[in-house]
Length: 333
Image (cartoon, rainbow, N blue to C red; front, side, top):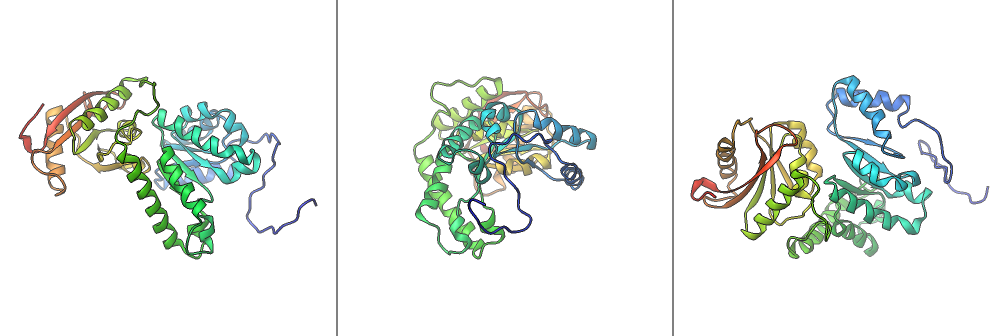
């Protein structure tokens, strides 16, 4: 023994520097995944991802069960850092699992990995979660350290969609206080972020797809016209996620016919989701916007809304329309 310590039960084992040849899913993982899918889970997170190929094992089980849900890659292995671009492209989202990553990867490089992963996820319109030891001292203390407050704030300023608590809320002495404190830090950081106005996602980079171009145009129009909200008609959630990455000041209202999509979009920054009936044409979309938003008592007749959708409606991947609409039909453009 070189350095002793306390070992508790049900803990994982890390083997730094060792290339362990094990499958992405153990037999128990497969059983648990099947059970979760049958119970109607909205998302699945895969631990110890090494490269983009790992998602295929998960998709194989999902296809056997007849149900696909988004798969979040937990980046916590050095191999994953080497293949991060492929992982971001292949998976539906990423969790920066800094605890295990810092055991097997140089500690001083983890902050740069976090920033790079967040940038890649935003560029690819994939939600990104920053996790592990964010408010670690609040497991036993009622207030965080100043460094922890800065850690949470910087994750938001970097562009994270979500921050996650682990032991702080599961076994800590102050779970409610921890959540409230983290929320205050997040809100303060977001207010600072939004006060700077609409910023390019990555300076000098242009959207690479039709859907990305339409989303960026919608965000810029909403900013120029001081629109009250962006409304995205989306079946898969992709349009709302493309809007989310621009961190606009306006709420992003996702209208979807799919309850699963509504639940999944809870992970994306700034998105409020509503399950609505299917509509067959763009005029019906506008009527639905009026009906849904005016009953919320948050918007008024004449408020400018920037609507983005695909035509024909209800077909994933066909986002091709931006329309400026004034609630109640007072003005239309």
